[in-house]
Length: 372
Image (tube, rainbow, N blue to C red):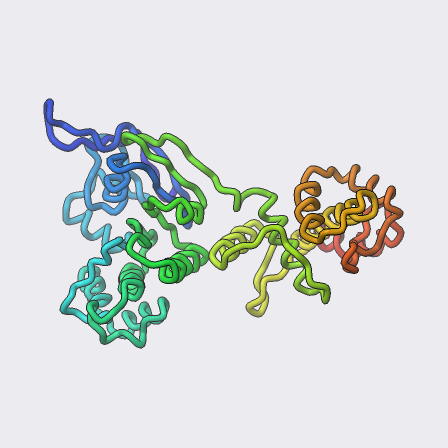
């Protein structure tokens, strides 16, 4: 069973002719640790869905399973207990108690869960970089700082899932970047996140986006971070870091986008973290070799055959062209160009099966990859 499982869920407010349907037969599943973005116009059912997932409300009909429990069958007291143990909330308006310090606001969540622990509350503030502001009241904190306290409050009871309702809606660009970075870190550590947002750029950080309309899922979008082209771009960036020659890159990523891509690629076995550094696995290194070979042969083609000299035009053209090359066409292009060993900027072109010296590459890269 998936971590979240909704089946034919209806939620109706009121009765008779005045009844309003907020959710109309909604069904979807989400795995443990998945990041889901919920988007849609006002009145589409986003907040209602979040309330059901957070056990603040129950469905009129249908099944809502969370972490193996059918929440539609829980009593009010059981819902409260389940919510405090399973869910962490982050709201657009922060909802901090104004007369309590940052530390006390975090401890308040502990109080409703079991018992307060000042040391654990301080550790939660440290996770979001707010330990030095622990004794300040909300009125003494900026909007971004208040939201970071709210994230610490959501984390302090070690919830299985974080529900975020427009978490960056009231923040400026810099604080939005900080908060999204914190959410990305939490996601990388295996936290599941369900986030309501109106911001397309924020929604694109999720693993999946559900577009709601009139209480139904109109569209499900899986983002380009899962697509091979993005993975290849990251592999190319990492490969060129170890080379002395500076390289242009057609695609640049924000810190949050980069972190998210690296997290996904680590999960699927292309990258790993060693001593705090992101490095290739054998399989990732082999794929990077193929990407770099295609790209640099494409650069040579544009320079040697088409006599293009502008570096930016060469880079952009090579990025577009390389993705349509099959291994067979790549080898034919390599032979046409005379098996070049360097790109136009002087960086080495990894050899392929058609090149002299291929056996050494095969022994060093392919065999470890197969054994892994």
